[in-house]
Image (cartoon, rainbow, N blue to C red):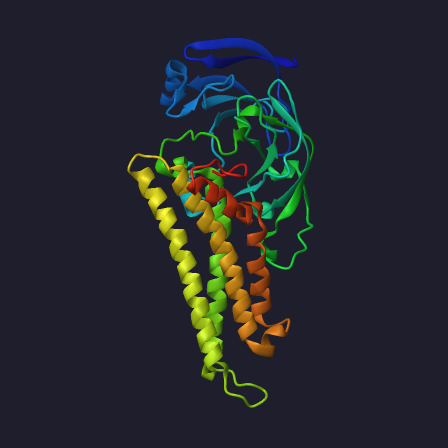
Length: 376
């Protein structure tokens, strides 16, 4: 038997049966013939209202996630199973205590760009291509690759969720900074992904809580930017600690006894703290708007994007200033500052933090549309 009967929800109270191809398991997956399904409160909302909160039926949807069935094929063929619709790590204290449903330790890595073609199938998409900069993919439980959107995504791309073992990880992250992120390439060769394992990048949230109403693309930009703040803080901490104790090989006063060094480090300290203050002020204002039941306005989002880009570039300048003030010691490979300088240079080069953000933010603050795509 190569096909199965499927009941999909098309709208409020509109469930239709169709014949679809039986999915093919891959990697560590197993095929389960469902024999019974519980009815969750969320299923009732989907059936009667066609959605939950802001999430609505945008494509035919299979209801039911609390199910039992029989494994078909493989070494466990014929085994009766109950399915927990989660992916616990099975190693943390919460899992070992018997609460895998509360597991906090699922590692997600993403490589959205460049968006690669996807061929629609009866159950989803066949993805094929190569994606860049999948930070953390070597330790991930789930990875995301970017595929095109369609008429239902408002021009936004989809993310397709895939187990890492179904992809090839090309270890080509040979860079001057952020080497430990392991931002390797992901390669897919005709990998089929069920439609239910895709989402709209920057789409409407399906959970009605403040965190999930936060602008998704903006949040991604902030996550990148705040790394720079940690790098700059480390450089200044080093300069203030070590600079006070090292004497010059020429017999000149130690760095902390030199007025230009004290003034330069103080200026860098003020510069970093000012940029951080703007970053956290903008984030706090946006978060408070969500907690109060509102939305993040276009102006608030512009300040979020602007403060993130400004923080990343400011941090790179701060680390460069510290290196310039530190004398010949900082030119040696075993000195910590060159590594921090390399780390500081990388985040600001991300498209989400590029100089184009300044123009887009300025346009929004002056009542015009943003001048770059995916601004929130």
